[in-house]
Length: 256
Image 1 (cartoon, rainbow, N blue to C red):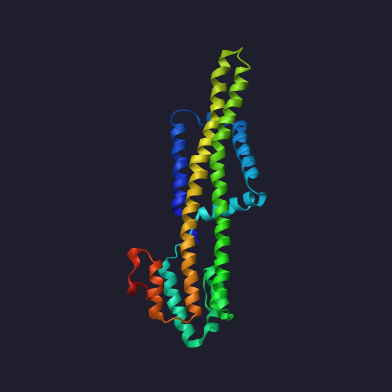
Image 2 (cartoon, one colour):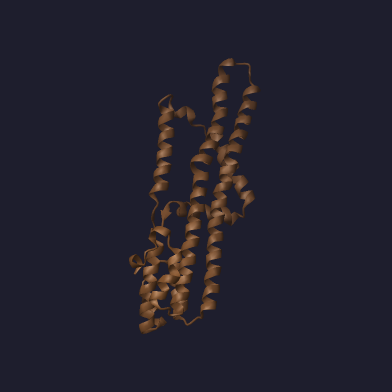
C-alpha cells in the first residue's frame, strides 16, 4: 500500500484555503470556541454510536481513515501477468511449487495456498467469494460511518447555534455582549459544515470508490486463482481474463 496523495493533498489544500481566508479578514482566535466544538464533535460522535455497533465506530473509523489515505497501485494487468507466470510454473512443477512464491496481496496469497493444498475449484471459489463479501462489508461499514458523521455534524452545528442564541437572548441587558455572543453561536454551524463537507463526506465518497475498485480486483483475483487451480493453458488464460481489463488496456501483448 502507498500513500494516497490525492486525499492528503485535498485535505491539506482545503484546510489551508479556509485558514488563509479566515486570517486574511480577522484574527484566527475568534473562530476558536471549545464549548461550541464540543457540542458538534460530541453530539456527532454520540449520534454515530447510536446508529452503529460500538465496534462499527471505533474499529471502522481508523480502518476507514487508513483506507482513505492509502492507495494500492497494483493494476489488473499486473495480476494477469502474475497469473500467467504462476500457471506456467504450476504446469511444469505442480501446484505445490507455488507455495514459496512471494505474493504481496494477502487475498491472492490465500488463494494460491488453497491451490497448493489441493483444494478443488468449487471449494476455492466458495471460500474466496465469502472472503470478498466479508471484506466488502467491513469496508462498507467504514464508508457508512463517515457518511453518518457527515449527516450529523451540520445538525449538531445548528443545535449549538440554537443553544447559543437561547443563551444570548436570555441576557439582553447589555447590548455590547450581543454581537460577540451571536458570533460564538454561529461558530457551531461553521464547525458542523467543515466537519461534514471537508472531512466526512469526501472520505465516505473516496471509500465507496475504493470499495468498487477493490471488488473488481478481487473478482479478477478469484478468477485468476481458479484458472491456476485448473492449470489453464496460458493462451486461453489471456482470453478468459482479458474482459477484466479496462478497454484501453485490452492488448494481449501488453500483459504477456
